[in-house]
Length: 348
Image (tube, rainbow, N blue to C red; front, side):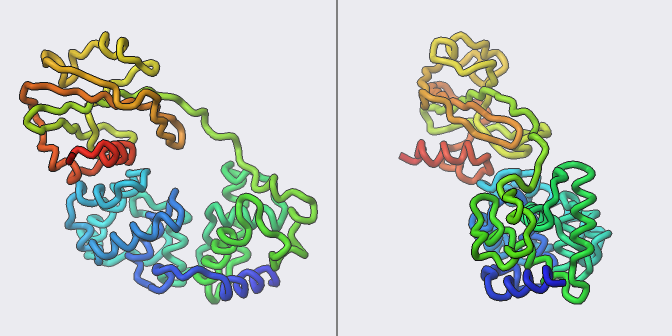
């Protein structure tokens, strides 16, 4: 088929030089695929290299503490990926004798692995005929074949998977999967693709019908919710500070943060002073406070925006369950907290 030949020829001449493309090691390929979920290559590359260096085998990853894994992951976001990675590494070591599953069906059993990731690993590492369908593939197929079915609908997921499966090269499925994904990432970009240089421009339906900007079609996203976070940066005279571990499920599970008070809206100093602090570490504590950032720092997650203020609390009293400020960088924290710690510069 001309489509396949064009895509693979283009890939041979335009592919990026990436380390996970130079290996058939399923563990390393798995690492790269999990890191690149929700993450662009330019950001994920350094994390991949750090993980391979720190945990060169699945045994090394399995033996590490979750805290160490989360610390190395810090800044990538979507921390459930790191927790699932660690969980699955222990499963591979303890239940599979350290042997990475080698079929799409068995790779799917790993926690945090869906159809796309399983297809990618199975085809890249073991040359299994398993078609990948990620955002890049959805875009290429919907534009080239002029498909308006929403890509995030049940019907769309089945339709595009079937189409990708009918196109895949049975002799070299891994190479073809890499090719069509790379084509979507570099050539058939989301916005303002250079269609004049595209090798498929003579047969692309979206280009012919002037629908490049309209495809792929996606159902409207879930409504964004807004939350208001007040972090209490409590510092004692003996250079101690309080960090708390988020153990409840949800965002930032098992990461550390400053004590948190949620409010219904953004607070000013007067409103903060009127808060009920009974259930916070400030209960019965003599302290002074100052607002660090006058304007909310808005941290945007997929389905919620966190409007955040940091309140600097100083006290001459000793703090319970506090740590030395010099140890603060040893703890895995959300990127929102990490940026504050870096900016505030506790060491000075």
